[in-house]
Image (cartoon, rainbow, N blue to C red; front, side):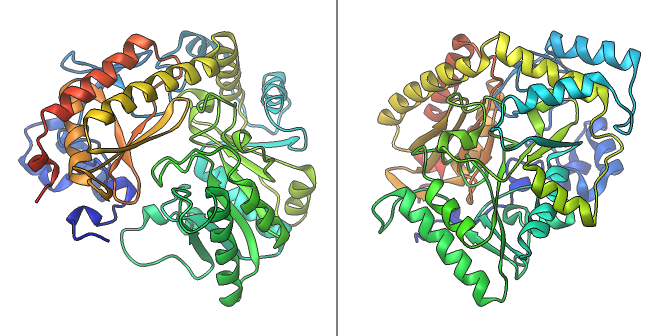
Length: 453
């Protein structure tokens, strides 16, 4: 451990967040109105929040006419306001929108198309409205199946905001500790004393299972986002999850793949993040990019698991599985296939990585560049000290890029990893804009501004 003040862990919603305490000092009436309306629950980005009025493709336009290149969110995965998705939603909502207690062919055509992207054993899908709901249901199904109570998550995981899911989202904690039934494992960042990252991660899983047992909890589930995005984006080597998952199943636990962020072709090499590791989950959860901005989520699992859960509890969502959501979801699947966006994610992601690694050779504050497809992490450190995280620099870069009309966020325990998630439709010209402006931003931030003592 170093003595750098950048070592302080950061809560995920505080990364790049607007300081609401400054609202009274800001002349923006809309900002003051938002703070007054939402209060302490308000979460806005940037030192000076942006009022966005329109968006198209990879670009967002602010009220003052400024256009921003969006490298921030993966919700609009096939591009902002994609005309195919807009048309599908418009046509369907003008025709019919009901809950899932009625038969409707739009919904079942979508479910069949979605199932075609998943491993055959995962033949039952439950639709809901948010990733939090999908993960909440997954944890409940796991408990009903395994009979256990213990949950294993990664050290800086974020899986949602229901009561059950907040308990297994360490990065959402502002104070206090995780419940007794939740044990964390270190992100797969290095092999350490082990022969490989595979072995190191399996050892972490083994340790967590033993710790749960010591506390009196048998294992219920291991849940992870298969690119470990909140931990700082760890994608490689492909296959490192297998040994750990074997241990989970040997202990009677369920493997839940949270694909809310890495799913739907974002990693380029595969449609689902877990597929890069050659594993088949017991449960897959999905959300954000499913409807390209239309609120929808889902859970896929083996019929036997769902039958066991529904025998005792059952599940129904009024808005989950409505035909407008299904129309949006089908349009997204069609656009990904017809516009070859998975291949584009791989191509543009590799191009950006190559350019970033060339930049890192010239700037020793870039400690690492990692990830898969268009889901990358750029780890920033103190100058020449790769193991000394530099959250100050990350914050300065984020705001410097904003001044250069590029939007990006942060991740990782210390908030020092830039999280790269542009739309899958990104062009090489837009990729170049991002890297060029990042280079300009770093060049304008001398070592002392990055926190060097």
